[in-house]
Structure formats: C-alpha cells, structure tokens
Length: 433
Image (cartoon, rainbow, N blue to C red; front, side):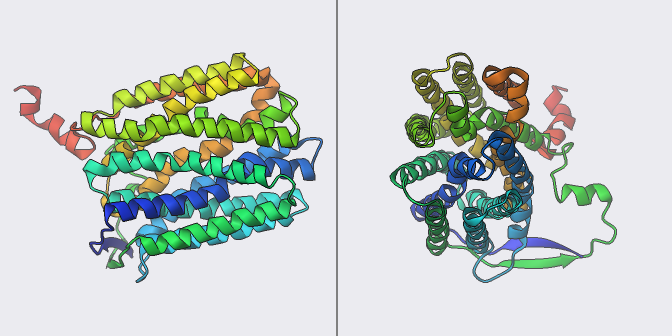
C-alpha cells in the first residue's frame, strides 16, 4: 500500500509565519552550526591533539552522510505525518530535541567513536527539522512572496553563526560542557516557541494499492524523475557546487589555527569577526536580491552574478594569506552568497515537481545545501596534502565556476519546465508549424 497526502488548507499570516520561521530556524541553526564551525574542532583537539585535522575530517564526513539522508527522509516523513498538531510542527520540535540531546552527549564524550556517533545522529535529526521549516515556503507562501521570504530566510544562517560566535566569545572561559549545554537549550527552546506561532494542519491520508507500481515510479517517489523533471536535478547540482565553494567557512577555525598559527582564543575571535562581516555583506544582498528578482521576474542572471562574485573572493583566500585580505574576501563572498541564497530558494520553490511532496523534495534540495558543509572539512586533509591551502581554495573556486555552468539549463520565470516543457515542445505551434 502507498499513501497520497492531502493537506487541510491552513495558512499562517505572512508576517507571523515569517517571524515564526526566522526565530525557530535561527535558534536551531545556532545549535547546529556553532559546533560545526568551532566547538567540534576544539573537541577534536581535546581528544586527539596530534591529528585533529584528520579526526575532524572523519567526524565531519560521517556527519555529512547522515545530513545527506536526514533532509529527504525527514521531509518525506513530514509529508506523510498525520497528527492533529501538524506535519511540519511535529518535526520542527522533534528534530531539534533529539539533535540537542546529542550535542550534550558530545560535550561529555571522551572518545572519538562517541563524538562521531552523536554528531551523526544530531545531523540527521537537525536536518529533519530543517526540512520541515523549508517546506513551509511552498506550503503557505504565495508564489509572488516566495522570493522575499527566501531572501529573509537566507539571512538566518549567517545571523545564527554570528550569534553563536558572539556567544562563544562571551563564554571563552566557560567549561566546554557549559558551552554545549547553552547551545542545546537555545536549539530546543526556539523551535518549540516557533511551533506555537506557526499554524499547521492535519493530513488526510488516502491509501492506494501499490502492488503493481513499476520500479521506476517507486524510485521517482523518492527522487523526482530526471527525465521528466531535469530542472530539479540541475538545480540540485548548481546549489551543491556553489555550497562546496561557500563551505570553506566551516573550516575557518582550523585554517586560522593551522595556516596562520592562531591560538584557540584568537581563532574564536577571528572567526566571530569574519562571520559578522559576512552577515553584514549577506544582509545587503539577500533581501534586496530576492526582492529585485521578484520585481524583475528574472532569477538566472542573479545566480550567475552571485556565483562569479563568490569565485573572486575565494581566490583571494587562496593567494593572499593574511587576515586583512581575509576580511576583504569575506565581504565579497558574503555579497554573492546573500543574493544567491535568496534567489535560489525562490527558484527551487517554483520548480518543485509535486506540491504534496514539497517537504521531501525540499529536503532533497537541502542535501545540496547541507552536505557540502560536511564534505569540505572531510576532504580538506586530502586537498591540503596535495597542494596546501592555496590548492584547497582553488578547488573550491573551481566548484563555483562549475555551479555557473550548471545554472544554464534552469528555466527562467515564465518558461515551461518538466512535463509542461515536453508538451510545449511536442506542440506543432511551438515549432512554428
């Protein structure tokens, strides 16, 4: 048996929905991203001080796999959750609760296997919550406002990073377990409050016989058919490659300590400063980029320009190893990333194949967003062994260039896509006959 979902028509007022998503998502991301950027590095130094770059890569790589499966699986489960509290709100709360419990486990861990296991579980469940939040955009936001909300949502992660870094700077002298506990509390309270701000409905589940469903269609229920919906796959590839370039920020603390010789306190302060600068740059282009894209009814040109700007900033990191240059590069990358995040999220919401699978498909797309943040530190030791820090950043710049090329097949606003495009091309009138 298989299930077809039908949601009761529920809509949260736009301003209330926006506040609920931003508040809850930001608190969740503070709990997730702050360890990924800072505390996990320090934990690896504590457990294996002589080879922390390798052990950090190992833990991040394991976490990458669970982040990869957590978003689509969590999205699919959210789409099919049938409780009165709501399919999105249920996982907005459940995901962070489990994730934050695992953060506390990491704070108390004394062995590598414990950290790796806890981080994997945390990544999985935080990504379940992430999928539920993102699904609210196609669920409840009108198409004409999706770019605006996407632009605002694009600011949430950098804001969360800055708040997390500022908190860690303030807590420099606190015990490590106190830092992990503080992040866990924030990561639980925010989503719980947001779940009571956002309205959500109960699903009705119509069961249908799936005995004779072909294997190809069964696979399409997991991932949209690349033949029928090639745009979805191209959007995935484009986002993944761009986030590979952007995710060097996850390795900032390691870079400052290993490349520049910073102490733990200096690295904390340095990362916090760079992230605040990045936030300011992203704030300038995220909301503006999303709004201008909505007004111009164009998206691809914004994506091209954003990726190219980020490429320039990444090359500065490659060839100018001093902190002043890092500040300039961070500004440049932030300007591009802010605009890309806003416009790309709106584009993805527009080309989702099936509205009833929106959380699952957004979850798949969020794999492209979250996975590079774990892959980059996982492959960093190999890239560093091949050609040092310059080669590391050149490789990520190449990913940004490839992202520009992968954007070309995406449909512009107003252009047909998926089955509609195939039908249009089969229409003799569309060929001028």
